[in-house]
Amino acid sequence: MAKTRSDSTQLRARQRLGKYRIERRLAQGGFAFVYQALDTIEGVRVALKMPHQYNVTASMLDNFHREARLVAKLDHPNILPLKDASFIDGRFVITSRLGEKTLACRLRNRIAFDSALLLIEQMIDGVAYAHRNKIIHCDIKPENMILLPDGRLQLMDFGIAKVAQHTIVKTMIASGSGTVGYMAPEQAMGRPSARSDVFSIGLIAYKILTGHLPEWPFEWPPAGYATLRRKAHPDLIAVIRRALELRPSRRYRDANDLLRAFRAVKARSLKFAHRHRASSTGKNASGKTT
Image (cartoon, rainbow, N blue to C red; front, side):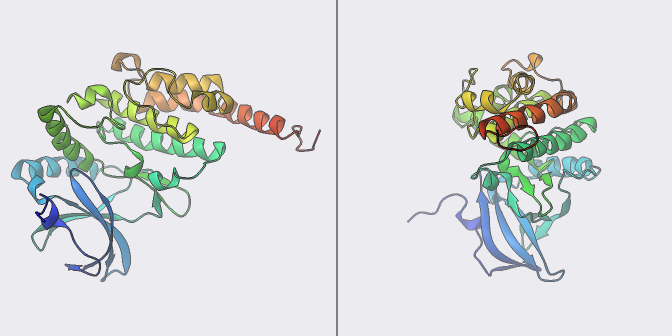
């Protein structure tokens, strides 16, 4: 059978790569493979992202180094820092901390409303910090967020995502194909901005709260809206809807504006959800059955 273009870059379990021992492949995308590996020197498990060999060009490396220098300055509890980025045995390897699971894995199961709001706030907070430092992510999706054992959410691939997305978008435009997924429409046409990150956050927030991912052409209300109305305060719904405006000029300017709007409605959203839960179970505010 003929090999695909990326077969030569795949690694096997127990294979060594410098000081790392490969344990399993975590993900595969249009830009890179991601592996779980053991650092045999430090004795810790890490995530290794390895761009496909055909993506590792001089231009890509220049762009990555420029972005990596910017990202190295980011210091926030909801942003995953890089441990290392270097060539190992002829492969370009980007090393980061290994989380307990990705948000994509967590979304396979129901999330309580209080926990959902906490995840959404952490996601916005991390992106808002990056936006204050003039950095846009360009590939915000559940697969690019990890959950730590203490429940903290961290966004991965700042800088890396921008370089990867540039490669993927160029391919999409050239071929006229591709899946929008969590990408803002204008970003799919090669015109990303901080408002594009806001749109991606809106899509993920909607999925966290309803279990449904709005899809192109992103007409309002999307599938799952009845669930959202039942669980969420109208003011919270208004915040999500503005984040999902098709026209970038109608969205929040950046994640900082979105964070302020979200926090302004968070308390009343929690009270609304608690009242709804109490009424649906036949209990009064003190928790006693009525």
